[in-house]
Length: 141
Image (cartoon, rainbow, N blue to C red; front, top):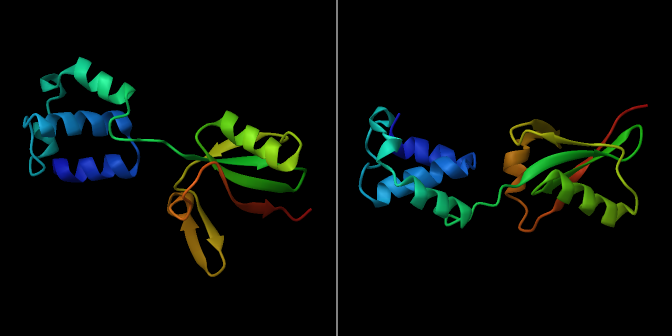
């Protein structure tokens, strides 16, 4: 695997620390995109500088997750949010009650939507603002 592939994958999967380290090593010309990842040596990085980059969110990562909030025995709402607390607060503001529970799902979870199958990761691209309601699910009771 090449550094370029790892870099793109780490952006796609929002691995903020890894992206910041790779970005730092690339800008310092300690590695190139065409290098094999076996040539990576994170000891070449200025760890203090990378820690500051991560803390200041230089690359603008705002990790959005997906949460399932239970409305009643059979109904759930899926909410994209930054954190579990943000999802619960958004739910409470929108439905004027607290959810029965809140569980994080993986963004790679796939569900049927009409005649297609879509992951929450792909669905998230359809939204510009967060938190946001991704959809509802009802169990047959």
